[in-house]
Image 1: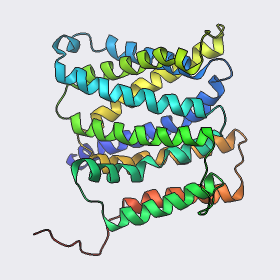
Image 2 (image 1 turned 90 degrees about the vertical axis):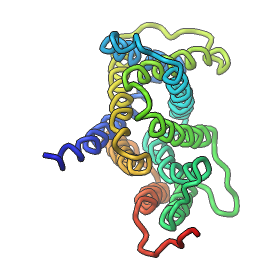
Image 3 (image 1 turned 180 degrees about the horizontal axis):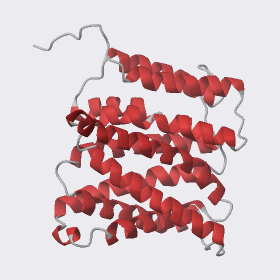
Length: 293
């Protein structure tokens, strides 16, 4: 029983990767009925209302630290999901999934830069492998590296997701789970709506039942994903959480394949190298690290 209790947070994260992987294709379909930032804003508004309704009593104790934590995480969510959704207008959902996966090797590197936790040799090898895969996936070579707008936006998304995971891990044990989740989802929604005019979204989409169903469905999914992430990362450190999240790419590629998406052979090889690089970055090196004196 204690072993199961210890494994429960990791099992929960594995299950949400299945849900998360399916959202790439669903969001791409939703863009047939809505502009990107309006859809993301509505999606997180639904998620915020859901968590708010089940957290009314807990919200009375909201303090300054929780507001700051929720605002910072919410801003990163808005940047991550916003850039990813805009990018899905011009790239395949499976390509988006593989590119977003680069947040996995980014997490330990950012942990090093921010908290001075030096990455292992395997992290550097995994990052090199993932970068090679990135070049193949995006049709680049080592001599000339150039990304299209969709690919660039998705790389920004990967950076935002990496920072989000680090912040969630940093604040997880210091704040109330429900209060912070409500704040971060509400902030993400408000920022997405506020950015609409800046991104050329000056009109609202026409009402349609498919759009409503997608907004509600993905809103409920987002609420569950963010709540589980905040809860599980109290017990699972950010680096280990990232390797679990890597499974999202596999599900996204599978769903994309089922929907008829076909990546070129070199792009598939690049995607495979990205996944291998992600896995390698989480392996423990048997080479002893020099002890600091």
